[in-house]
Amino acid sequence: EKYFPASLEYDHFALSMDVSVSGAAHPHRLVANGRVESRGDGYHVEFPSYFTTSSPYVDLFDPAEYQVVEDSYEGATQRIPLTLYAPTVERANEGMAIAKRTLTELEGTYGPYAHGLFLALIGSEWAGGMEHAGAARTSASAKTTPTARPSRTETCATEPSTATSRRTRAS
Image (tube, rainbow, N blue to C red):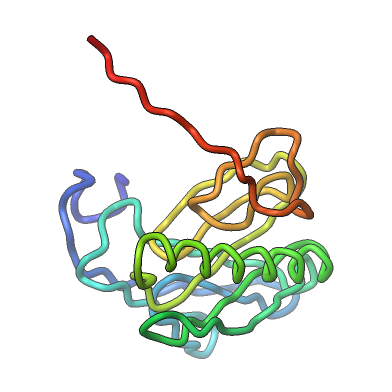
């Protein structure tokens, strides 16, 4: 948050960034939940003006380290590009299937998907996670979408949970 023009979560602002890659032995790939343009030895990324300090997702990685799977989902109001990447193509494909099922469920419950894309890194077991606007970093032991919360015993290969929760009000 200290690198953005506003440190308060509720402040909205447009943001662009230039990323240069130098000294690398081979090309890298940059993915982001903004508009990405390749430019010679780097990238230019522009994020929408409605983003806040926790919205941007940017990852620069060695393509030899991750397998990238791209597809799309026909949402309620738009075709949503989906990009998932993981250490293995099996994990990325598994995540893609879960992401599509979850988008169907979420659009049926909450309405049209609010972002122009969905991007997710599915890391190693118990790698932790973080949600962003239309993007997520998650582990293989969790669901691949930013809104699904599995128990620690569920794995990426499990079906969506049918568990429900109850909210209680403090007196």
